Amino acid sequence: MTIETCVRLVDEMLPNRVSEAVKRRLLGEVEGKVRVELLGEEPQDAPFFSPDTPADTQLAAPYPFDQLYWQYLLAMVSHTCGDNVRYENTALLFNASYQSYGKWLKRRGA
Image 1 (spheres, rainbow, N blue to C red):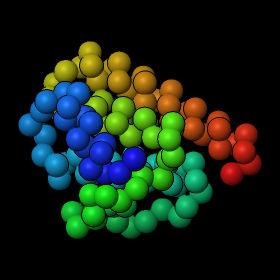
Image 2: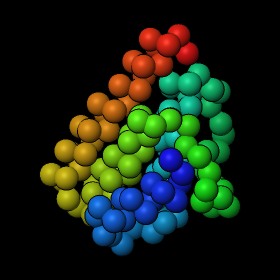
Image 3: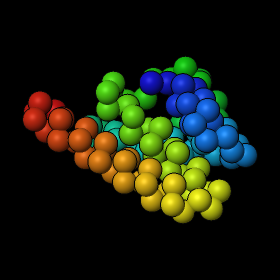
């Protein structure tokens, strides 16, 4: 999944007024968690994505685990828009997907 695909998917699922810059920042946060906590990369001093990061940049988690990105972004957009029920539901989906990816990596010995 690319940055652009994720942002567009969330915008289709939940029309909103959150800027693309904010969505990219949020994706950068979850990409950082994936890379550091699950893939074992070193933390960085700056966000994983800058405003200049190309929209076609691939996110680290492969299909079918890439759903964690849109779930996280949908949860954060819902939270930002004050929709606490949608936030809680999508946060639960994100947490389950994130844990599933982590367990898969562990089974593979990654």
